Image 1 (cartoon, one colour):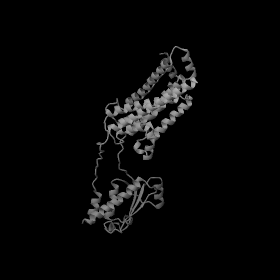
Image 2 (tube, rainbow, N blue to C red):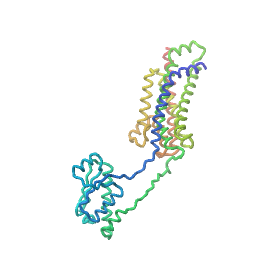
Image 3 (tube, rainbow, N blue to C red):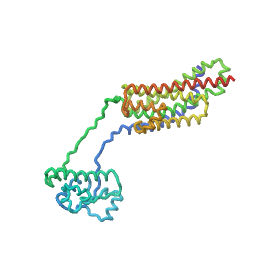
Image 4 (cartoon, rainbow, N blue to C red):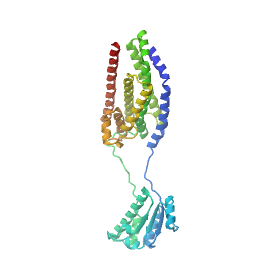
Length: 389
């Protein structure tokens, strides 16, 4: 067990980078995940309006009264310069002039009498607020004219347009073709989505330099001079690496459970845990493969950042894959991160699929683990042959 102990003695010198990444990850992940669960609803917007009624009829006053129910109306008469100043400083959002002859034209069913013949509208900047006012006025005129066409007199039509019912529409998402588990909350879904980057960053930044140190020329010569066989040395390094990767993975899973609502229960949560474990195995195997080339620590750190950030941006680590382009999703299928994030999206309902699709994603990740295992064996055999020569 001397090699096993030596492995963790070397680990002590690399533990600082792991702690740094862990603190940064949870500091960033906590507000992001909490923000992802905030429920966003449509809310009524109240505007500050300047209304000048040039018609001064019962119909025009009814429109002003209807606007006053929802918006704040400036009563003071303003000059053009005063109006421009207040709109420039956002004191007034929208200016509306009800033109003279409004009551005579509002009930007209003549298609040539447009909304522009009834009002003079002005705003400095295009926005959702100005668009909302435009839609409101257009619908108000349509409702009045529709009621007139149906036989009501003008004021009855105006009253009906002002008393239009508010409809509360409930939007229900069909879960029939989706994997849905109430225990797999949006918090957990975002946590596992972001976990891909930190697993790559921490495992490669810690395990890579350790393996490079353990497999250096000095270590190899000491093994040849000691009683420890090569097979025993490799076995101990392998198990020590497995323990380190398992500890790193458990730390992040434990932190996620503590910060985001309890233990992982339910089928979807447990599959997400399994998916993250398989991906951690891939990162470990890829790190072992890269370490056979014995690059400097700086190069290993650069590879970790390029791989972590690259797959996170391209494969859906920082956003759902549904927000990525179809062409990009097709190209990134050659990356294990794509299948890791696809499994997460399937489990949280961002993509439609079955339980078989989730297992297929996990098996593809296992395939990447086996691929780099074979490449590592081949590379190690080649180096042994070169040393023998």
